Image 1 (cartoon, rainbow, N blue to C red):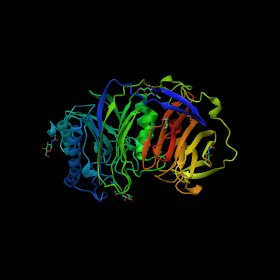
Image 2 (spheres, rainbow, N blue to C red; image 1 turned 30 degrees about the vertical axis):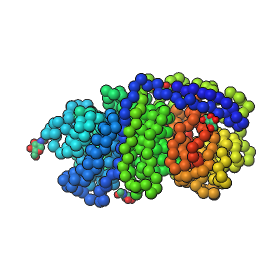
Image 3 (cartoon, rainbow, N blue to C red; image 1 turned 30 degrees about the horizontal axis):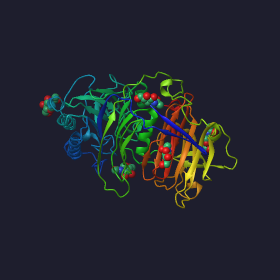
Image 4 (cartoon, protein in one colour; image 1 turned 180 degrees about the vertical axis):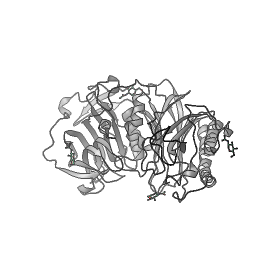
Length: 516
Ligand SMILES: *[C@@H]1O[C@H](CO)[C@@H](O)[C@H](O)[C@H]1NC(C)=O
Ligand SMILES: *[C@@H]1O[C@H](CO)[C@@H](O)[C@H](O)[C@H]1NC(C)=O
Ligand SMILES: *[C@@H]1O[C@H](CO)[C@@H](O)[C@H](O)[C@H]1NC(C)=O
Ligand SMILES: *[C@@H]1O[C@H](CO)[C@@H](O)[C@H](O)[C@H]1NC(C)=O
Ligand SMILES: *[C@@H]1O[C@H](CO)[C@@H](O)[C@H](O)[C@H]1NC(C)=O
């Protein structure tokens, strides 16, 4: 619940969100492990099963140590990253030695640790199961699954070599039983893996925290299965990922992880791999209330990182059965329009105020999309930037910080992102430009000195809007105020930054406009 103290100062109306408490009646301890995956240096060269196992055992050795560490710190569930055992860049045939056939836990119960003889060729599942059992915790890992199929009896999509290969999450309960299996729905340029013939919505139950849903990496950007899980009322998602390369200014791993948690009002247990060559790091335990995260910086030793946090149980929400992505008056998902700020109307401009006549717009590419930008020319001001009828509104005040001449711009994009995946967006982003020229606006930068108080808002055509405030050196800040109204307007308001502002973003996903 939110508690607001309102005082209007000059341009801004500051509202202090009293540190809201989770309305949870119970808590649990979650852990995620960012793993510096030991890679196969030649992933395109097929290995024997023995050699592939030998390779995976080196990663499993680390998993076992970390499971013991996590248990020592009281963890009840531990999540390992995507591709953390075999690595990346395999072809469909070169990964064959790494594959195990994972039985469907919805069809049969199996404890690989106590019944190893039930299936051959399941050494990896056995070690994972025993690690869960030995440490008395739920364990989630990502593995490569082989499922035999025939075109006649199974599905027309059965590959000509007679089996599917899936990028797969497996979950073991604290006694080692295999309790869930999820096949990734949205592979990201993964030659080794197939898309499952039917999308899978996989949920498992735990005695300490109720239900969790399973997703993998790129899935987080799509309706199926991620938003389907959320719309079924699942409030806790498990997210093994291999998020490379990290992409500022809008989609750095930790930035989007917490943005998703805040925007969807869910807990996200995110475990990423660590690899400096692939430019990937960034894992965390996120709730709508707080974040415990890790993001390695340049020059840090390349190593793994275990995160453990006590988090509130988020009970199942009401199932939302409205048409996907559309704004509805579903009161559960919205906060009252007038809940405490802008009482003093004269000092807070309405959203539809005209574009300041002095502001000229320019187009610059950000995240491969043509954003329309407006520069922040003054120490404070009020700006609009529009792409068609979609407009972003910004009120800002720079907090003077030395002689910093850092350039900032407000960017807007409404359209379909088409590079490395297609997805429809409405985005508002206040960014620090990487250099002193406007053409640098939208390029990657991770440091900033300029602190800013601001209000950023827009009226979106979706209720799935993911907010982020990213400060210098990959520090996440929680928007002091996040507000959504039933008609789609989303506002973030922020002040008292602890470090310079790199990005403030409202990332709206227009799932209903995605074409399949
Ligand atoms: C910001 O900092 C000032 C000065 O420390 C303090 O008075 C104010 O309450 C803070 N505002 C918020 C929203 O935290
Ligand atoms: C993976 O493949 C890409 C493209 O073939 C290559 O650029 C990259 O270096 C490879 N990475 C690893 C870790 O094998
Ligand atoms: C496992 O492999 C052995 C040796 O090839 C074979 O005898 C046994 O029947 C297999 N067990 C199962 C469950 O397939
Ligand atoms: C988020 O979920 C909590 C319950 O856990 C609920 O009280 C709150 O209203 C929700 N917030 C939004 C914006 O839906
Ligand atoms: C958004 O901006 C892009 C780039 O200028 C432009 O091509 C596109 O037509 C604009 N969209 C709308 C709806 O005006």
